[in-house]
Image (tube, rainbow, N blue to C red; front, side, top):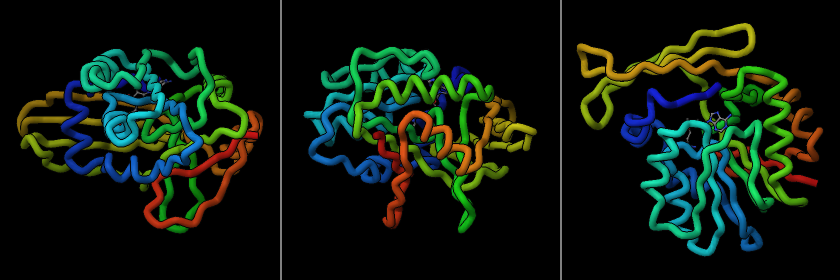
Length: 236
Ligand SMILES: C[S@@+](CC[C@H](N)C(=O)[O-])C[C@H]1O[C@@H](n2cnc3c(N)ncnc32)[C@H](O)[C@@H]1O
């Protein structure tokens, strides 16, 4: 499963050193006025939700994440936002008291990779197929009829290393597997390894992803927009 415990205390510094652009992610959410309840699936340390809650104080915002140390950072970050509620949950057993007008995941449980002109493919933090199906069903149950699902878009993963804003060296290594790929994340002070985390990802072709989502009433809505960071699905 996509447990981020090892990375949690370094997550923010890695991500805000250029890995993700949180202002741009929230720009890309493009919320219509009718949207009142929003859910982030795999909210991590709450960096997206903080930006969203700051911009939209009237939204009712929920965030769920599997990894307790990630969520603890989110709880601290978001404690002054009374319109945000967080809970530690695996999406495969998602259980919230309300349905949402919009659910999104960015680099969270599910996301798409788009490599140039090639077809997008879906990446899942959940390696087991049956668990993915269960998770999609649970997620769908928490999106209201005519609601929207946005799944983030990332570029292709590759091996690299870079120095991040605190002077530490971040590196990642990708190993292809028969179900997708394994990604190894490392942080070092130049001499010793401070953090190592491995996540096994499952991938699905765009056709497979659309078919799985269609089972739960979601239709892909192609959009022509520059700089878009999400693919949009509409629920029947
Ligand atoms: C790369 S982080 C993204 C966090 C956040 N969306 C962001 O942009 O900073 C992926 C998150 O997905 C969470 N995750 C992975 N599998 C999950 C599952 N089955 N249920 C809930 N959360 C999950 C991990 O715990 C981790 O915090």
